[in-house]
Image (cartoon, rainbow, N blue to C red; front, side):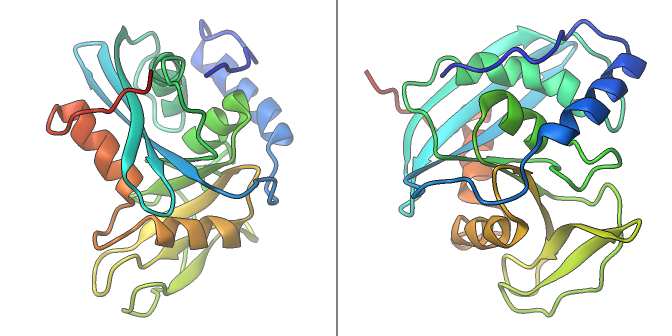
Length: 225
């Protein structure tokens, strides 16, 4: 799977923030996606400056894995909150480069628009891959929201500085919410609906669960010829 080189990765934290502020203007937060037949999840683990990045592609709506890749790569950027995509995206792109199946949609285990500079991991990946992308994070980075009702499918919008930047979504009854936001080429309402369809019985989408299990070596990744 090919991707665009939009900037250098050898940058300082200040330069990285400037890149976020520039590229966020290019992100599309309306629906530009065709019929979704495949959806990808990503996971990355970092230990002693070595990243293990996994990408797993599932069919949709069945949510069974059909393709994937795991890549180990040195980490070239320090851990700085708000700039994690500069640490995680390069190894993930190497994994995407090994896929035989180009996914119709990407769900990142991280933020999209719900980011202090409105440019989280889902925006970064979605823009570079030019693929519709959703951010589905386990915790909130910024903004405030009311508590959704307890039943699955309930949600409340996440507000920051007078604008809606995402939603707190109940993907399973009586469990903690996840934070859904647009990444690229998708509206918030569509992002919420598709995230819920990717959550079978667990709090997290099957995309995230499969990518995490693949990175841990607890599930085999199918390879397409």
